[in-house]
Amino acid sequence: MKTASQRGFALTELMIAALMATLLAVWASETWVRRTQEASAEAAAAWMLAVRVSAERYVIRYADSLRQATRPADVSIDGVVDSAAPTLAELKQQGMLEAGFPETYGRDLRVAVRILRSGVCPGDECRIEALIHTTRALDTALAGRSHEGLLAYWLMAAGGKGGMVSHADPLQIKGAAFALPNPPLPAMAALAAGTVALTVGLDSAFSFPWLRVGDTRDPDFKADVSAAGNVVSDAAFRAQGSLWLGERAYAGAACPENGLIVREHYGGLLVCRSYQWMSAGGRGGGGYSVNTVSGCMAMAANPVTGQCSCPAGYTVVLIADSGPKADAEGRTRGYLCAG
Image 1 (cartoon, helix red, strand yellow):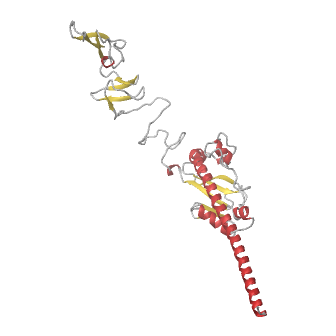
Image 2 (cartoon, helix red, strand yellow):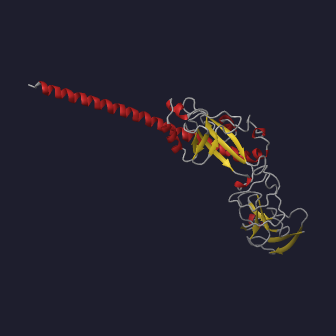
Image 3 (tube, rainbow, N blue to C red):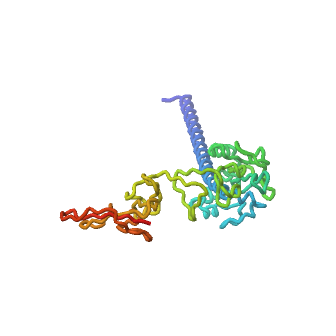
């Protein structure tokens, strides 16, 4: 039989155990909520980084026009209402975002893209930059309240490319790689504390080495060009200097595409006709042979015409004759096409 003191001790143990269970449950619940919010912040960063890639494509494609315009909004871009503030739907139409890319994250978190200019504008030295920012505070959108921890997780997930308007310094949009005034443009309203942002910047026209359609930096494009793949032109290709061909082939051999031109191993040029390398005329009108038994064989055809014939304007000249024969091999005559 338990004494009163023993019963009191057991009751105390039960109360301590219940308190510990409650504390563990609360701790686990808070941990789960915090981890869910952290994962949401990381996902929001990944979503915005995808928008940043599309904004980078936009800046690269239209950088020259944006530099030369009096105002970025003056640039006329098909399908974009305001060239200084393209929407995600317009970036999709431009092919810079996947068609199924979500234009909002979560319930109602949205982003805006703004084109910023600095330096000597308009002109080639004008600096073009794109700012991608949320239209409301990220922490309140995800947690319903000010939450510096969520903002820190978003910055970590942004991989050094992100910045924010901190509650401690609401007059700046600041990150590890950039710092902008808040608001970034005189006509814009200041971004709320807790707003997160990414930037894409191109310094001057000479900060990237490639040329684009309509580029004003070097209309003659006099620099050397190397291409690992094919070079395709919809118009005529003209060269003021020599044209060097490295590939060689044998006349009569198979070729992959009609119209190709290569050097012949023994001199001259070959053109691919009917998927066979034929003389381009470097050896005159060519020649052929005909046998009385086998007729015009493929290997004996004129590489210029592909048949046992001469090109138009050439005269057929008999240059070889095996003589009359009564055996099964027949008689072979060789002809040269003289111009």
